[in-house]
Length: 274
Ligand code: NAD
Image (cartoon, rainbow, N blue to C red; front, side, top):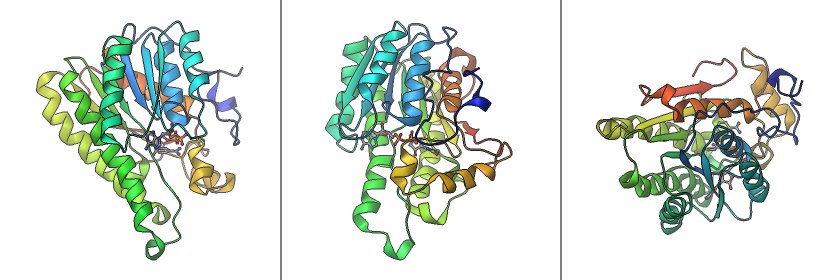
């Protein structure tokens, strides 16, 4: 059947974001989540999974991107939960603070924060890396993440969970993603430091490190099917993954089942070690 990940269509442009395959068990019942980058790819799969597990979900996303915020909100509401679309740019400090406030007022709280918005581009080599592009990668992956987390932290209570979408690139950087890999390594340091700061307050902070996953980010990076498939074949499972196959890691880290897990980096890499 279609709910078996091994049988999902593995070719772009038909990634399964969880529309078909993610069934819920109510593990996040009553929780309020904000997912940045929640209209596309991994973030969208996470938003759908959270809703099917019983959470109300706000998604923040770039307004002009190819993601589908309306469709994601529709799927959240189909699960019987409240869904909220927050278009804007997390590189803008004021917007990052706004999405925290609008989640708290719109959903009635915030206890799961998924810092997932990200940007990458394939580079020909360091000598041709433009400063403006370097700036965009750092602004999105580091400043945007920090702005959002900083605005949220004062409102998080014991039991809350922060989850960062890092990457296998933090540990095994590709030369053509040098700037991106730098930010992903920095995100891991951020997670470990913040886990230590917030531990005494009962707030957990973890990272998911995906391997190669079929999302709209792949063609936007400048990669074709062959390139991602080559990364996929280099894993023990021998293939790239689908967004829906990553979402369960976030559900686990957000849930009570992970109540003693903090500062961790959970690989979802098809078996490739970090
Ligand atoms: P995607 O392009 O499908 O989604 C990216 C999302 O981030 C979109 O919703 C976009 O609107 C949002 N976004 C980007 N810049 C933003 C900004 N400045 N302000 C607000 N929102 C912004 O990509 P994806 O593959 O699902 O990527 C999600 C995360 O997963 C990223 O952090 C990426 O680095 C990470 N990741 C992806 C892979 C992969 O193979 N696809 C592997 C490891 C890690």
